[in-house]
Amino acid sequence: ADRYAHLRRAAPVHQGTQHRRTMAAFVLSPGGLGLAKPLGASDVKRSGLARQRGAAVLRPRAAVCSVSSGVATAAPHRCAVLSHTHRRGAFTVVPTALGVAMPAPTVDTDGDVPVHKYFSGLNGMALNADQKVFPSMAEVLSKIPKHCFVKDTAKSLVYAAVSTVLTVGTGVLAYLFLPMTMAYLPAWLAYAVVAGTCSTGCWVVAHECGHGAFSDNKTIQDTVGYILHSLLLVPYYSWQRSHAVHHSRTNHVMEGETHVPPRVNTPDSDGMFRMREMLGEGPFTALNLAGVFLLGWPVYLLTGASGGPVRGATNHFNPEAGAKGKHALFPGKWRNKVWQSDVGCAAVVAALAAWAVSVGSLWPVVALYVGPYLVCNFWLVLYTWLQHTDVDVPHFEGDNWNMVKGAFMTIDRPYGKVLDFLHHNIGSSHVAHHINHTIPHYHAKEATEALKAAYPELYLFDPTPVASATWRVGTKCVAVVKRGNEWVFTDKRVPAVPAPA
Image (cartoon, rainbow, N blue to C red; front, top):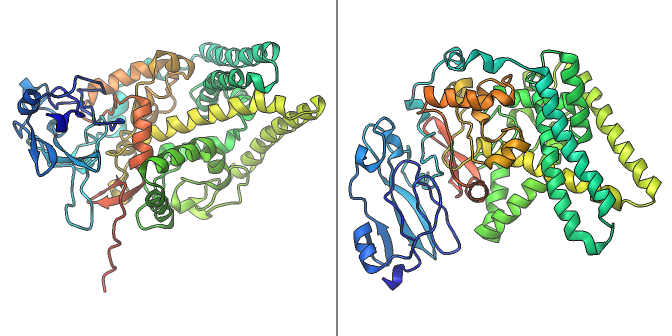
């Protein structure tokens, strides 16, 4: 019993079970993460934990799920029974048995390609997509109530005003009541978090303008979007174009845009693996997350980092950068729109510089603007990353990809009522947004419920707490390797397969 005192007891594995490594052990709980009392000797025997050559093995009582176990037989692929092997103080999760009618999420099990051993709260639901039937886009759209596509300009303007007032109001209060001294640094950091979180609402409103979901009046829509995005140093039209490409190629491993994972045995993935091996898992994850959240957004805008490999090194401020021809990010009319976007960003930078010169110091600009700006960048990168990335969410290429399949690889997550209000449900209703990006955010929840009811086997919602999901993605989603018709994440190097002679 003492040998297993660090394990936590959990309910039987069933739909929604997820896995998380804590400081001491994995905690298994249905649909979420939780703590329970330590296992005693009787608990070990009753739960099926047994000693086996120094390992703790969770032995399944049955390899087939049943209704009594709390798992619906309509989705047998979610009935994975898992074993947990203790290695160097950590646990490795590997699939050992699955419910009927659906094969294991592992396609290749030979020595060259590692088995799929990590699962999110989705429990492998998104894997084996080629064994599912995806409807046409017209069929999917028919399931969403017609009024969900109706835009209300007045309502959209109210939401834009609320986000703007919260952001500017927070800044005014900080300017009036917080002294610009090091003694108040903690207060300024807190201000940056609050103001940056509020300003993300402005970012989301501008994002909605770029999608044509704000208003039927294009002049109002583009004016609001251009101003709000420029104030946040986002080139409005440039990003409008690149984000449209992202939607049109979601989870395409070659032609996607933003957070496209590196493939194994490429320079990008090799560098990541070398860093991971040199630093160790924990320090690598911390450094990876810090780099992505602090530098990811500006580096993407300036170099196209994490963009589709077919587009090369793009630049949202220079339409001539990157690939030419059919894979150009800014073809035709978009070249002039990029330059128009640059004007807005340049004007804001000039205004910030003039402010610093007028007060004779850079610190007011850093405290009042740069801090919240970095926090806003954190939120937008977090949302975009977690909406399309997790250990058991695949990518595709060629004929194995289509728009509906890519859209249904989007993941909704639980951000809570406060963030949903401030950020206009951007993280909890993103599947509906990828099905049709012209649905206004104030109809997205209703559209989400319609999709969930119509396609329960395709709609993805991961109940994992966002902080845990972020650490998991930063740790395990290093690169993708091809298994069958899917590209799936791995945190281990995979030997290159020699080309046929």
